Image (tube, one colour):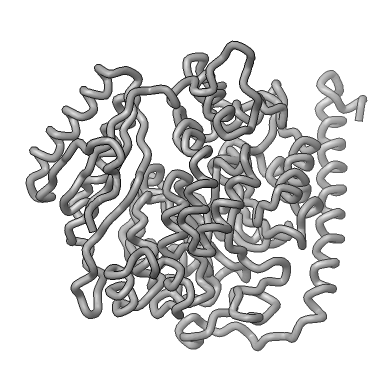
Length: 508
């Protein structure tokens, strides 16, 4: 290998590369043989027919039937709780650091993380070579395979390329694939149905849909999600819309929703107990927004695919456990110290802040791949302050634990109107971010559905926001711009109210 280094001949480097890949494939074939031997002990299912022919039956596996109502795979079931969207460790020169990746995975296993998502946006998958992706998948399977569920990000702009990537993930021992909606091209809802159906038909691996309109430019509707959930291999959704009102309609029947809307404090836990009439009991609903995940689970979601869990795995797992138990007070108490992290880990494009935070904690090197660059100096005290508040690092001598955005001036606002069908909420949040502000979503309120057979999203909704500005002048500017938005977007019939202190909850 020394002879094939940077100063060696091209032929020598090629030989070394081929040998390295052969060793990797040998390890993966051995791992696959082990998985197959385990699967042989399970009952053999019937040959998988088309989705239409298996309506009402979900076999979210290639080789194993359902057990106890869970989506069972040849490896691990899709878990509830906290799944970490894992950052890929890199050295200062930008090389993937497999040894550190293994240490991170062992740490997450010890801290109680329920599952790991690799090669997603946080993992900088778009900057990794095929060989590097194979190494990451292999190391992950070797470290936590059979103990933590492994989801691999395989979504691309192309249906055929996504099928190929999903087949590769299956070869390397993935328990499921996380497939994002195609970005940039903005397919129609019919196009999304066709895209995901072709992938699920082509690969015998459970699929988790990923809806993140802020990055892709396309929003997968609730109706489209429900339609896709009927495919026996489409087993879950990562919802990064920030719209928590989508969880409950997919969880329960219309009648249940009306009962729950009248008796919200006592009914949150009941959503999980009542059989879901829409997507089915074994269809996992994951929040993709850390700041909204607690409320998402209290409204009936299963868990979160979390960036914050990279730096605070035990704390995020505790929030999810309390939320799934229906204990809103305990969930809020566990989530409180994490609020600044939920906000400040996105002060620059993900994964820039979280990789800096992990480096600050001594968990990985400082490497990050172009076109991303290290966290700006101006943002570093802000992220460090959030880490201190969450107990991830000790307060530095002479430094305030409330550094950065934790100490920014803030204001609680109540935004009301047709928030979703007219895009009012998304435009409002865009204004806050473009003015270098931050926000916390404190609460949602939405009128009960008044349709018998469809989900009616043209309903008056309310959202309470805590808006942060870098200084008092910036906060006033953000508020002024939000008022102008409400005035201009007349079709949304919106209103903006400044709330007094401790009046953040929207009216029922």
